[in-house]
Length: 204
Image 1 (cartoon, rainbow, N blue to C red):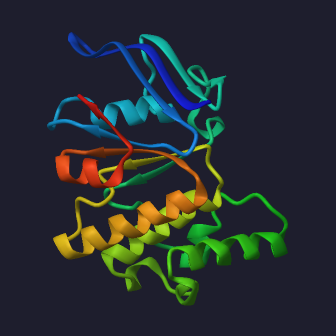
Image 2 (image 1 turned 120 degrees about the horizontal axis):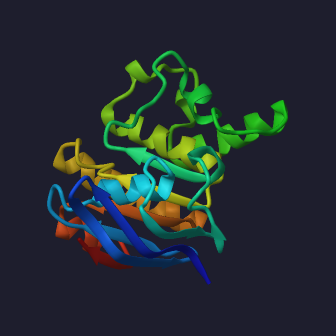
């Protein structure tokens, strides 16, 4: 069964047509990569899936539900950006727990579980400014996973890191999403990254 379906999508910026009858489909637990040069519409497609942008026509289905007209907060989509976008005034634990809607004791258990998953269980009281770039990306991923999204979107999530850390974090994240069985779509301009990280590649 498909977890993400983009069907007959049409989207333009003014007279610039980015997508014309575009189609993309990912099965539950499948990892896809959007590969293409700058300006090809990779990030715009993620924003359409999230609900940050609205298509002129077409459908976006998540878990079989048509979410095309729903606002972002009702789509249950997790997004990790290149700059990780952590809340600087919140601790690591507070960041991870931001989207968790559970009673206090259960909430703490969920936060700890996902901090363990990204190998940062001992940094819960730290502030984002005290973390390295790779640690911040791990926390951003933990925050997304803790909210239990139906799909995870990675928008150039590794590109701001140096090569050694990028390779290490990419492998860690690949293992994490595999263990979680989470349908994931990665935006990248690197063919090597797309091949090593994903099950399927979509060219833009």
